[in-house]
Amino acid sequence: MKKIKIFLTTSLLAVSAFIMSVPANAEDVLTGDTRLACEALLCLASGTHPNECVPSLSRYFSISYKKWNDTINGRINFLNLCPTSSQMPGFANALANGAGRCDVASLNRSRMNILGVGPISNQLPSYCAAYIGHEYVNLGELTPKYVGTPERDGYWVTAAEYDTALAAYNARIEAEEAEEAQKRLQSSAY
Image (cartoon, rainbow, N blue to C red; front, side, top):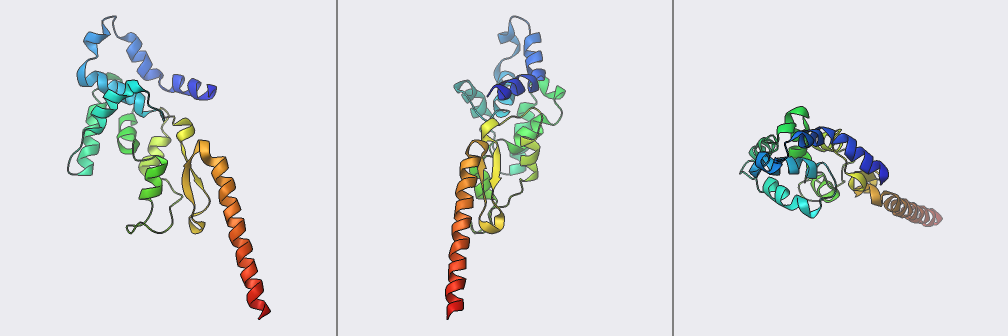
């Protein structure tokens, strides 16, 4: 936990430096969508969202258009309202493309084929790799990790759940292999 706090502190230095440079009457400088955009940058960079994030994330996720690409562009434009966004190249793009789409539930749901069946891919979509791998993003224990292989019904879990999920997965595979061996043994006996 200490490492996460240190990482978040150092990786969000650009945002913090801007906020620290704002005059004492910051309420007059950062208001409305500008303030919400800056708050959203901070909130979306973390895997956890305290109650203080509700207004900014509500505003961010309320940006929606008929075409998904227009929604992404609208969200990028919103995040770019924060004066520090220009000091963090690609950050707004990574957030707009990945935040809310790269959690475990979304990965397990979206990586299946159109019928909702089939193996879940062990490859992160490029937008998730850009989001999760961005230097200013730290999802901590909520970072998605893949358990197993697609051929053996692998799936995504959070980093916090990984060890337990891997043990359960390995136990299931071992049981399946023992059952297969038993079937082969029985069929060869005939």
